[in-house]
Image (tube, rainbow, N blue to C red; front, side, top):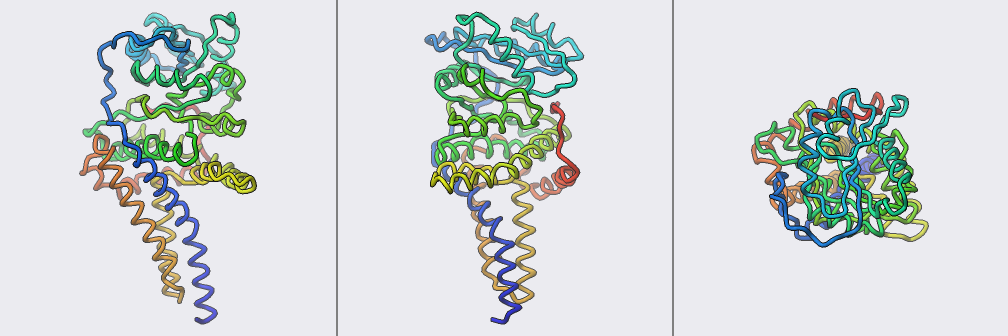
Length: 404
């Protein structure tokens, strides 16, 4: 092998190695998540009021709401009949310019108002709720605090399961978007990606690392942890950052697979807006925290924390595919320059393994969310996401966005 061929091979290996590692980590996490029998995706419509369950810990559901007047009454009316004994719904009307607070009160929720335009974001709303609860008499404070979005839906069994598991550590329920096979193909693909992230990979992460990522809605905390948590932040992915901060303090969030919270899927424009918000914040957090987390775990010889750091480094599914394709193209071009074909071949095998893992996941848990016809348009979904990543190159969003 000549010097040129050696240099080209080394370059091809350097290009292929990171996407290979991330893609294989994705495959391992998906396979680990699918090894646990998945819950059958149920429609988000709630069942008739169930028979009363045994009394559990006293809990407050905190629901941040920013200009949610058009939907808050329906959300409250849907949720109140599902509350187990000892539960309370607390709506935080946060910097609202409409009548969210009055509508929520009329629907039967407890309401607190926050007006501080200089500090905007869900984290500040949660901190305001925390301060309101802390001001209560000790006997009136909850044992568990849950967080549910203003468009969220769940059922009594899920609430009871979260409360029971959250007396000692933070927990995260399965957080899914309502399936709709009549929605635009791009929305269906995005909903399926949500299933992969919030059900399959969360299950895999829980098995491999003993923890879960917080996803913003369907979270529950013991009161002492919620009381002391760093909530007052404008971080656009405050949920993910909060979970990482709690894990660093030793309070590893658990995963409650038997509990599910649902949110309504948006239209194509709203979906793209929300993905811009989440993916921009996630990528910034990943770039800032993943490598230090892996390095720290390596120094301590902690394989579980090391996997959690590696999982955090895995980019969103579409971006992972784009990175794989770009790296494969570069590695193939280097083969023409004399490089060995094995770096490109290894990457191609990793991509094939990821495709098989996704196919199995779709057959197991995804068919209610993604029709075969919509799945066939995956290449168009990749193109649809390109403007998102171009926009993120100019800076990630910092506002509290809502997808409607």
